[in-house]
Image (cartoon, rainbow, N blue to C red):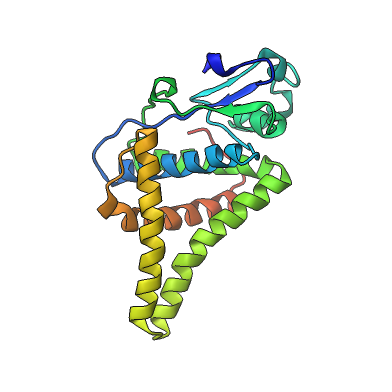
Length: 221
């Protein structure tokens, strides 16, 4: 991570997978971690860095001293995330995904603690730059739209074979790319569980999103 901090590079975004354990919750955590990594690493490669994970992130002292987290002291968590969002540019930011650069983190083990954690994480997004909120919102909506459209068409008795065929093609392409990226980043995803985890992920984050909108106070735990 430190080796990437050359003269012009001020911020380095790394990847931090979670320890693999048994159970549906851990499968969801693995999916979410890879999904988030895919987003922020890909956007950074495309010239639009917007976040990093504090578990594996490097930035120069000069970046920190620009505001020393003073502008985010009122927010519960997300300080490092918002520092990246504010100061990362296509020219001063690099990513590194080499296995030697990764940190392995301990995952949540109960649904309640994970739900609370995700509320805190998602609430930070409201402080992102407007253009980043727009991109991420459209990205999330496109994924929800696929599932919503599937059920609408099925319940309205459209051609079931055609609907399932189109959705199947979409799913095969997405899950193949997703699984291969997982292998590259060291996250093992069971392909046969992906449809269930994908649906569960979208439902879970819809609930989390609604909770963030109605929450009067964001808690750490």
